[in-house]
Length: 400
Ligand SMILES: Cc1ncc(COP(=O)(O)O)c(C=O)c1O
Image 1 (spheres, protein in one colour):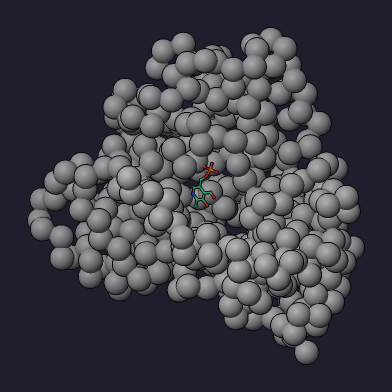
Image 2 (cartoon, rainbow, N blue to C red):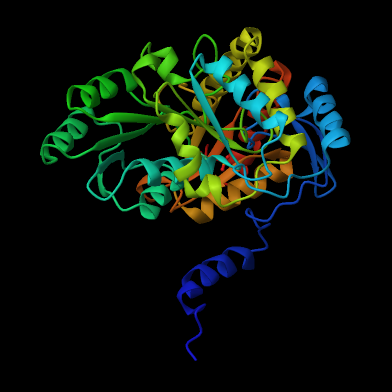
């Protein structure tokens, strides 16, 4: 017998060498109690959360929680079925209505996760004779959507408008083309030049899908994302999103104005062949989405937090993923995995949780400490966070 686990030996060795130094496992942390969107108890200690996707702090919103509890009481704990059989309740429809209102679009389709939304929509739309042109730094769910389908895959250099144009022009005439972009790229927290890219895609006869997972709720006047902020949302054919970030629960979706969009419900395998979201989840999502429509003050505060943290970290001497804050994500670039893990552990000891990110999730083989801010972080908390970075950075030799 060939042990099929042999291929994982290098990862096992890397993990063991990391933990030998007495380092807490950065990928195995347990939240013992969650007190609020910004504070949890980890290892018995009060810990500020700076590594969640809870951008708008909706997880403890009283209306959201009440809606979830009511749905749990009235509809039970789960649907035990696919959306196309017994798994569509009034709550799923209400959630899709909330999305249509939020984006001012004609159609919305709710999936069980954002990962599945990308998997389903990308693999279903682009068929054998078609081409998918995608940014090389695309999220794993986009790549997996490409792998599940059978279109030709053409990556182009991150955020490079000319490279996108060149790739599009090389595609044989008559072939179907889908350009896949993200609003915010979650590793470095940088945004895409969507305005220019969508114009190039349209000029070359391509349809455009934008994953706005990390911008929904926060970026754009109504929180619709980078496409809204750059004034081109009407030119985007499909927006993919998730409930696992600003919405504060779990689930995914696609919205579109395409007149034939609804047929996807019958032909999209990751929609058809899986159980639908529990009623409590869609009730919390719908309530949260409707509240996010009227959250301009929170959006403004989140921008303030992002600017304050970015400026403070820079002043301390850390190298950051972007020159200016572009989103709620601020990535601190570490020289290597060992230093990154040591810094991550030192921050946790100080009482701060951030994400340690490493390849294959990160671009260019980088190790990152990814900070994601929440609209409910107070100004004082951002000050505390900077103090913790200063102490941990000096203790680990990351800064002077
Ligand atoms: C860009 C992007 N798309 C999709 C997803 C998947 O979202 P979900 O957590 O709902 O599966 C993520 C999650 O991190 C993401 O970053």
